[in-house]
Image (cartoon, rainbow, N blue to C red):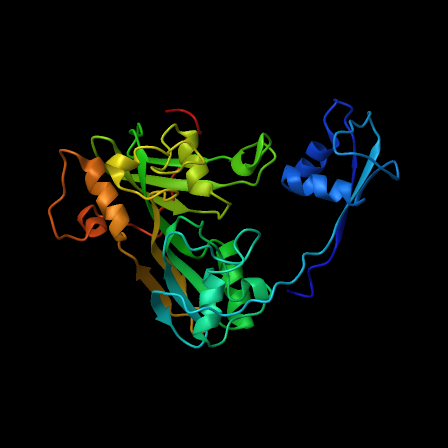
Length: 343
């Protein structure tokens, strides 16, 4: 664990709207309701300097103090797990992550993660994010496959993180969605934060962080669309939330309304049809421009052909090449943005 991870404290005022204490704490501290209830039960939440129960409903302007302990370090023991390495030098590597692999250890996933696999193969990894996230510069969701950057030195990590924050790293995803967008090209902008009604989901919320996704339709099939999605920001579940906001969620995405149809698509439980297929960045040390591609994995090829219906692509072709996925301009600046929920 990084030595920079310390306990934090929050002080807030109750609004007097009759909301339960555990819900107030969960929303303010970006925690699940269970995590908030645990803090309350262990005396880490005080109302006017006194402990209360999770169901307590503070009155207007009562002061609530929340102390969140520093996370405990977890020893990461390397594991021998299959990894597809697309590129590697002494500064960084690029992985084509398989669907189903969690990127770093977290509650419920203390083994079998990408970090465990990276430690297991040996070699240097940056320590900027701590042992539990060794080398991890950015993340992909568990069931999202595709390209991911790993830093091997602290300097490379800092420079790559700065490049991501400055939007100098180009990331494009292939997505299969149910139904059909109205336009072939659009930009979706909408602030993303925790869903106030479900802490395990993200949602478009006014107080969320700004997020922008460019969308290009590459093919219109009987059952849905093949899209190329370009991230301008890197919010949690960004593409999935933005597409769901249009009424056309990612196929197989049980969290945001795209689940079902697995008999048709052949997708295994939990798998959603989202793949990080193109990555372009400037090497943090040499300044050389690097570009990487990752074709659709077999399960998404099966799903695409199932959704294509009467519009079947030729056999034995690279499907992303066939639909022109890699024919794009990195300097694409489109405007104005389409607002979510207009389809």
